[in-house]
Image 1: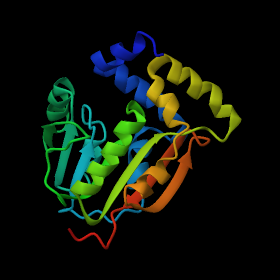
Image 2: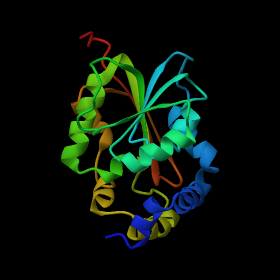
Image 3: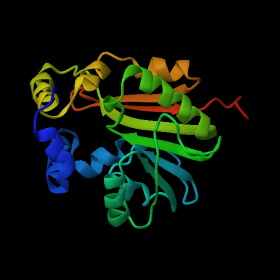
Image 4: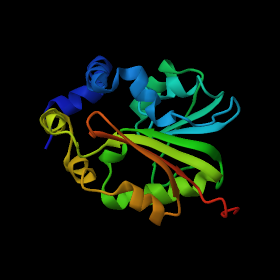
Length: 213
């Protein structure tokens, strides 16, 4: 699945940004979209935040408004070079989400924006285990990603978008109960919200208070 537009969107930043801007219109624009997963979180200026699968820093630039200690992690060297230019205040590290180059209990918050749909089911389970490991006890994992629309009017536009830009893993995510997988990894679900007619989901989950390892 996906068309020639997918590789082009990653090659040309202006095209990626245009697509992101248009896709965010149903939820009130890109600024609101980038902040949906951060809603109601008590983030302090010294909170340690990881922007997981940060890409070119599209969300990192919003995270630095909350904290002075934001780290971006991505596997793409090209994306990280762009991120360093786009968000010079951030710290960026190359690495796999399934095997993060961080010590246990390193972060207060871990955030990821529309990246989980790029992963296979096995990779998702590995990532959730890693997120749990590098979060501090009581730390919070929050993300926004695709979801099966509840409003029928949103099914055609989402289907077109996915046909143009996404691969099989994105279609599989629509059938995946992410909250259940997080619970299996040890998290407690704090909140779940749907936006854009149900086509987007936000989940906030907390590392077990009992885990003081």
